Image (cartoon, rainbow, N blue to C red; front, side, top):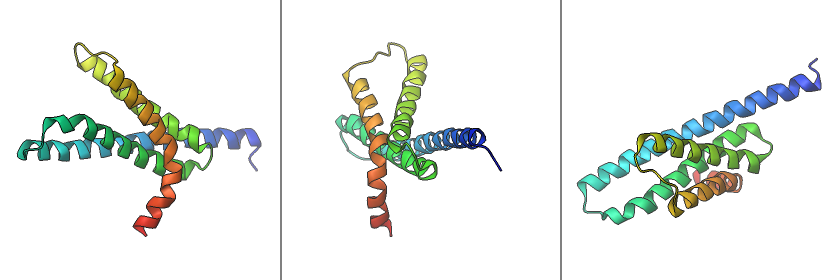
Length: 136
């Protein structure tokens, strides 16, 4: 029989695994939706002023899905885990951007993206039951 310390350690390792899996899923969905949006933007007359709001929506949708699926496996500390998924997702994205882009700076849009990413991760537990009602 496992003792409490071993059980807690295993749960912690599983939580980290599922969080990484959720972040990876969120990035996959982001890249897929951004690719679709870029094709639509290229071959239609959609205004380029729609880029920022669409990117924000894609980010939120990706984090909602990634955190929802990962938290369904973790099953505890839902707000904290969801918020961490959103935070890690967006901070990793900004760190990569800062290395690849010259003149990168944190502005109001970046701060809003960070806040919305954390909130999207935290909101997901309430939305999951609504998604189940729509899908099933």
